[in-house]
Image (cartoon, rainbow, N blue to C red; front, side, top):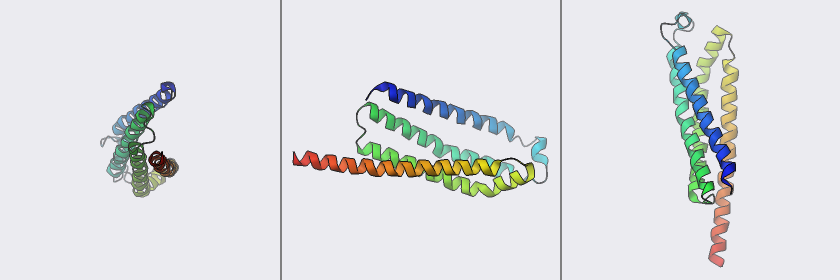
Amino acid sequence: MKRGSTLFLKTVIILMGLLVLAVCVYGLSRFDPNSPYWQLPELANLQYPLLIGMYAAMIPFFVALYQTFKLLNLIDRNEAFSELSVKALKNIKYCAITIIILYIIEMPFLYLLTKADDAPGILIGMIIIFASLVIAVFAAVLQKLLKNAIDIKSENDLTV
């Protein structure tokens, strides 16, 4: 496979990682405990659960980006049909499921934030959950297809 096609995807993955890292750094500055925003009585107890949830979800996100980068390197080396690819897809699936679980846990806090602030937090949370669900299902389907292709390949290698 040509390196140009995977190079584009690797660049997109790096840019996504940098963008999310910038959001995390910016988000950290928004959670200043001395900010008058968080001094409101209805928001006072939401700051730390939201911050912990946001950063807890970033761990599986960056792990999934790393696994995707590994998968693209395997494709570059013509090792796409290997157990390492299946393992990378399985890890991506588990990371997406972890993000879904973390955001479901985070939903009550997002609801309280949107109730007090008239912000679209629930909508953003639902978009993240839905996107993670799509990624998890897609990775599971690709994992199963790749596993079947590897099994067929190994059977063909044995018969020849």
